[in-house]
Image (cartoon, rainbow, N blue to C red):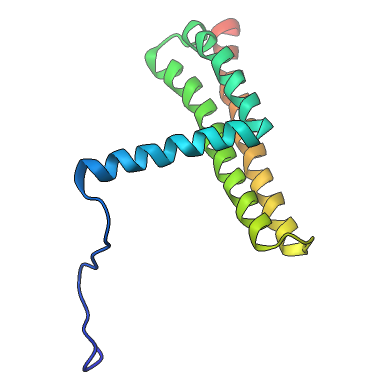
Length: 134
């Protein structure tokens, strides 16, 4: 510790506490969903796909675990898409001109979404194969 420098073990951040903080966080999350829906075509497409696949997951999954795995694989795509969109927004704010690092950040985010989509294909493919060919 530095002499003469006051240090606290638990820094206190001003703001809401308790249920008010939870409600505010829920409001921020809802705003994020609306922003993604409004500004991100890929997010809208993935929501529509999840909506269409949800009843199929209940039909295809032979156990509760299979059904949850099918649905969670789709939710991973949404999570990844939201994070990718956030990265793209920050990159656009920080570097509106074309820059190799900005392009790299956006491409890496896109690659993450691609991997999440491939994971959906693998999960649905394996469970579908087990349902129809075993």
